[in-house]
Picture 1 (tube, helix red, strand yellow):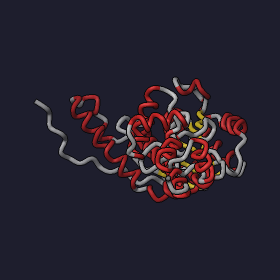
Picture 2 (cartoon, one colour):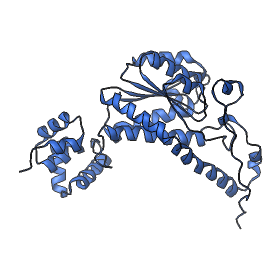
Picture 3 (cartoon, helix red, strand yellow):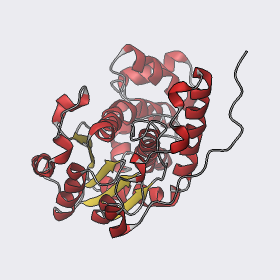
Picture 4 (tube, one colour):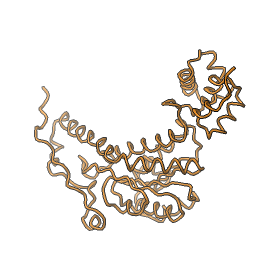
Length: 324
């Protein structure tokens, strides 16, 4: 028989201190300890999971409360990327890995170049699969990593830190701002040093973790949700989708070839043979193939129409000559 859930509602976390008071207030709210959770090691497994799941459900609400600043960041980033700029994530530990993850998924999903969305993590590649002790406390590593990227005013750097005061991440934002890049601070607390260092801030307050200080939990989930929103919305604004279809992928393996065929068929309503022929003619580029089918043009003409429309398929279709 399952044990009953505790009926008493969990108290809400106290407000996080702002500005200079935050530094003097001791540990960040993401490191706070909730006394009522001190006995989780004695809970039945189902009750432990219910507690964690209940806390997880609060994360989406915390992100929803910050949609307006996220939208401002999306529009600012899209404007810069549309002019040739890059989107760079910087962070340490879990936050850094999430940035690298989001960056690495943009090329197969949206057809971006490998240098258009970049993830930088304290400690380098080794930190992706294991802890590089002390790297997050070394601002000089951030300076070196950012200098290697040669940031310009067209670029955007998003510093990601649960506490908002990781030295590596704060230093990365400051260095990027000095280079003239747009800077964004993504933190899970208010009034942080990271937010103060950046031009734009996204502060998603998730409160203390069930396991005190384990910011791979709610804070990590919040960061993943925000990065999903940010990169996806930017790519939609840049015309990397047609409706909700991933038309900018290039079919370079069997899975992506199957996906490209489904996308082109969905976008055009064409039969399988027509879809396969269009994809073959365009080198597996789904966006070009859609234009070939719907506009009745050949592959070079499709590529020219897309180039003239800045890669936006809907605009290319509108500017195409009437189909014969």
